[in-house]
Each structure stands twice: as structure tokens, then as C-alpha cells.
Picture 1 (cartoon, one colour):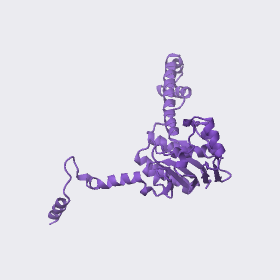
Picture 2: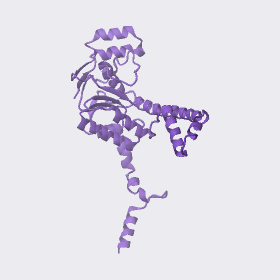
Picture 3: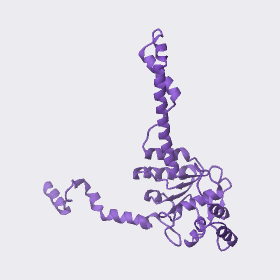
Length: 304
């Protein structure tokens, strides 16, 4: 446990801060002043895995940004926040371990996409360089040099050409799917015994890859001493073993089990309503589903 508790600004006790923000900025720059007060959220107590859950605009990503801003955590890219946001974050308080800030980092879904697009851009640049180098090799007289070597074979010439082009053009990143690249991104980024803030890490991941990510994150906590604070609405990530979930869709904000969350119940009710289609799907070839009694009676007749 690196982070034990985070206390949001008590606006009643910090009237000077409230006045300063209201007098210095316009209404649309006050955020998050008053936002979490309406939700009656003032204190967050952390576990090895803590999750902020809620729909768009519920404040789950804002909480991560407040924590990151308060401690000055590492980021791949700067986040655009108002001066009021920074002053609000500075005025928050926390209980934490001494070594919290050393390697702690915030990772966002934007970082994942940037990593994927960056790999693609690198490969495009390498391909362009490779094309130019091959043209230079073929028409720059280098091919004639190798043809004059005694005992030089076509294999040796092709190998020399390949090595020359690769050295000049550079190496391409291995081609993976977006899901595979995203999983690899987390494996490269997450180190042992560190706190990570993860903002919607499930973005770009299929359900199968979300389950892979769930297992990986559980292993990071269980075997490698990591602590995770996550903003998500993915049912798979919400089901992380032992996670403490703050439901920001409720006011006041409450801690709930993942299977009791309203939106998760929507999934459950949908699949339960259509359960027969899943159980008998192997018989469904585009027509009507078979009658259960008819199927059973046919099986009995066959046996007799």
C-alpha cells in the first residue's frame, strides 16, 4: 500500500480558497470546485485495488487527475487543466508512504492509442527509407561492386543488399493487433512495487483481451506488490478480485460490489432474458429454436 487515503478539499473549512477561485476565474474555470461537494464525497480510502466507477461526466477521471496533480505523478503527456484545478489539487491532503512518488505513474487510454499509432508511424518511415535505400543500392553502383567479387554468388549479393538496406533504414516494430499492442503496452510500463493510476485501460480491447488484462492486473498486485487505482466502467475490470469500488453515479457516493452496480445489472438482465439463445444456440441455424420437450422426446425415442 503506497496510498492509504486522499481527502478532497473541505470547502466549508477552506473559504479563502473558494473565494480566491471564484474571484480569479470565470464560472467554467471553477471545476472541480463544488462538483464533489454535491456528491458528498470528501474522503477516499484505498485498497491494493481501488476503482472509480461511473458514467461519462461522473468525475472518475477527474479524481485520478486530482491525485496525479497533487503528487506530480509521471505522465506520458501533459494534461490540460485550469489553474483552479491545480490549486484545488494542491489543497487536498493525503496519507501515503514515503516512497510513493518515486516511480508512480498515470497511464491513460490516450497513451495506449498514441503508442499504437506511434508504432505504425515508425513502420511507415522505415518502409519509406527502405525503398530509398534499395533504389540507391540498385542504381548507385553498389550492385556492380559485388558482381566483381571473385566467387560472389547471388545469395551473397542479396544478403549484402539486405544488410545494407536494413542498417540504413532501421528496424520496424512487430505488427500486432490493437489489442495485443495494448496488452504489451501495459506489460512494458508496469513495474514491480509501484502505484499506478489507470484511466479506462480497457479502451481498444475486445472482451477476450479485457479478461487477459484483468488477469495481468491481478497478478501485478498479488505477485509484484503493485497498487492500482482505476477509472473504468468495464464489467471485466470491475470484477478484479478484491477491488474496492466507489460508485460515482450515486449521491452520496457509496462503495458497492461490482455485481450490484446498476449498469452491470443491465448486462445481467439482458443475458438472462436471452439465456435460451446461448444454451440452445448450437441448434439455431437461422430458423426457430427447437422446442425443449420435442428435443427430449426425440432423444428418448432414439434410445428406445
